[in-house]
Length: 322
Image (cartoon, rainbow, N blue to C red; front, side, top):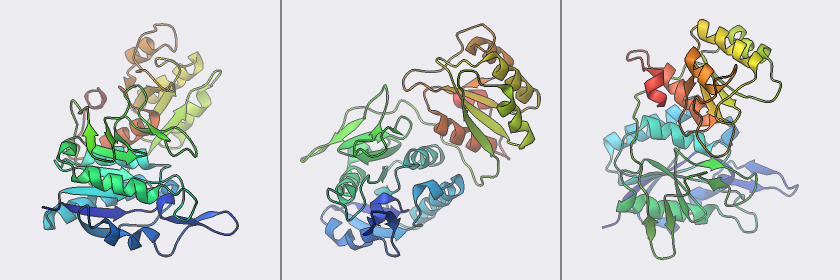
C-alpha cells in the first residue's frame, strides 16, 4: 500500500531560478509545485507551501510556525512521513529545531539543493525524490529528524553545511551519515541513542552567538549585557578555552544570571572542561559556564533559545545540554 507523505515547501535554492543576468532569485510560483504528479509513483503526496523564503530570511519564529503546521496537519490526517524542502544556508538549524520540538514515530526529512531549478545539473528534484523514498522507508521511523541530500542520510543533531557551493556540502563531522540511498534501496546503518523532546509555544528570548579568537577582549562579551540578550553561546578555542580578558566578561554575565554556553570552534571533537588556567575550560566550568556536548554553535544557540522559552516548566539548562 502506498504511503501518505506530506510534502511541505519553504523556499530556498531548490525552488529558485537563475535569471539572464546570473542572479538566483525566488519565483512568484514555486517550480516544485509542478512536479508532484511525477512523484505519485513513490507515494500518495499531499503538497503545501508553508512559505517561500530564502533560508537566510527564516528565523526561529518561522521554524516554530513550520512545527505548528506539522502538528496541526497530523492531528487531522493520516501521515506516514513528512518531507520538507528548504534552503541550505539554515537547513541544519530548522532540522535541529524540529528534532527538539517534535516527537513523531514517522520520518521527518528535510532536503534542498545547491543549484537552482533551471541550472545545468540541478540537484533539487533528485534530492526530493530520495527524500520521499526515505520518508516512505520503515527503517527511517524513530530516527529523529533527518536530512537527505546527495545520496546520504544524516541526523539533524550532527549535520552541518561545509561548502558554499558543492552538492555534497552537508556532512556530519566525526560521525558520518547514518545511511545511504542507492538505486535499489534505502539503507540505514546507525540509529540515535536518545532524543530529547521539548514543548515550546513561543519564541521570545534573544540568544547571541560569538566566535572566540586570539586576543579577543571583554567588551564584546559585556555588550551582551548592554543589548539585553537573555543568553549567549561562545564558540571557544580548542576543547573550550577563551582568552583571559574574555573570562572576565563571562564572569560578569554569569553574575547577571545570563547563561553562557560553550562549544568548540573546531570541526571535530567535544568541548569539555579540561584546562585549569585562567580562561581554560575547567576554570570556566567552575564559574558556571555550561558545555554543550557534541553540537556546533548555531545548534547550541537554538537549543538555548528553546530552553529559555520554557515559561511554565523551566528547564535545568545544565542537564538539558548534557
